[in-house]
Length: 231
Picture (cartoon, rainbow, N blue to C red):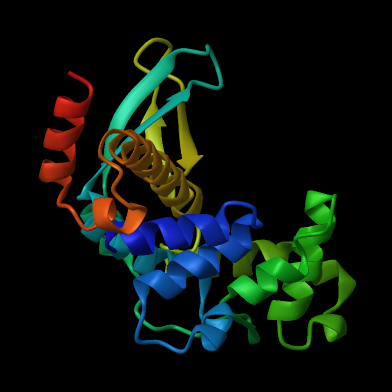
């Protein structure tokens, strides 16, 4: 993604819902694919594509930080896109538990429940879409079956719901922290886009160059000219 493409992507996605951004980034990560079909690809396939895309754009290391939920200690750590991709999906489209089948969720499925204010209600609505014959399942089996199917989906596709095992060095609290590649990658693109706009502003003001002329410069030459313009 060259600077022109990055800014176009940022401009199109900056006011969109997270799921729309996910598809926008997915389309950028898979330029040879029909963008109209990406909403119906599995979430795990999408996340794996975005991890690979992020590695291409910014490298393998993903610098992260969060607060311990038990004591509030700030944890700073680095993840590896390659390590997270070790669990990339193997192409499974369905899982089965006790004869009940559920398909892998897609971005379109997530969009169908995005307006639900209640998390539990959204989960039930989602499984109603994913589970074959959901309405015919005996009520007494539903809760346990949903839990088993959710576990089976995660096992079939580790990129579906990425999480990281963490232990706080201060209080030794251990927990699984979710990792959202869509939000992480978008924040990096947002930072990069705003920096590019700052660079364009400085060089256009100093030399009268157009945005297109400035963005065609390599990163190193832009930086060198900015150093001189600000000297």
